Image (cartoon, rainbow, N blue to C red; front, side, top):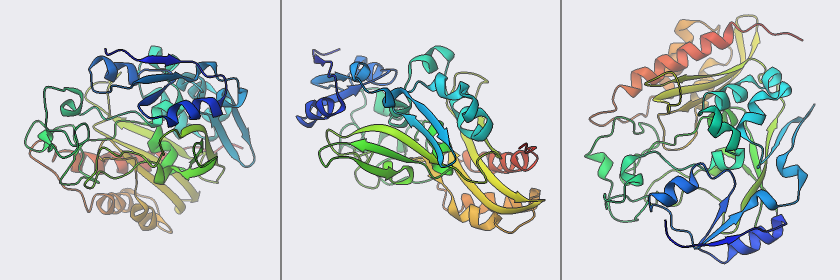
Length: 333
């Protein structure tokens, strides 16, 4: 690990000022950042520890008729165990519970979780020089390499790395947004706009500006949030990243779908919401046939390489199963 300056600001504004100087990284739980620093993938000149910022809102969970709000420093374990989250937004609780080991969930923060970096081996191993995400313009070793875990949606000629998170899939399905503070003052960003497709600049991963930090996450209340779930398919039952996942939420009138929300994980370069699949389901009786029709549409633009073609049929079946299971959920007042 390379030498760095360690700062412990007391306020959000002070943290943002330190980050604005460049070459800095925010430290919260550190469960991704410190790993990448040890691997020499990330080389910040300054670490800005947010744990000393004196603002209770950063560590609070609040729920009311308008929706659910998480402070960015809320730990994953706190959120998954919160009674309002489990009852009214089960897809969020499940996405967090399935995301990592208990020890990591006790440390990792929600704001940091949204910004975690890809698990692509060619990004994390600096002996591979061809990685446009780590070294812009160098190429993408994964395209001709081992790409079993890589994306089939949202890829480009420059990058096929999969976004690894689970929590973000639940948030994008529910239409969440993040509140930030930065050089332009406070602003809100739709979760759907936070992460950028790789296109020709995969090194630019988010819409955040230099010195801008997430301070809270807001999930609006809706009729479909209670009938929601997260289904994660992985190589082993625990502590593993998704090869395919689905976050779904349904507002039903008997067997008929009023409103559907669909997000896919493990298969895309960014948190992936399929509005086309949602539109296909609206007004339809939910059964295996309509669920499969939605799944076909969700993966209509998928593009596979040598090792990851299995993700397309697996992703479709994952979505079908998630929809059918959500349709069978019992709703209680």
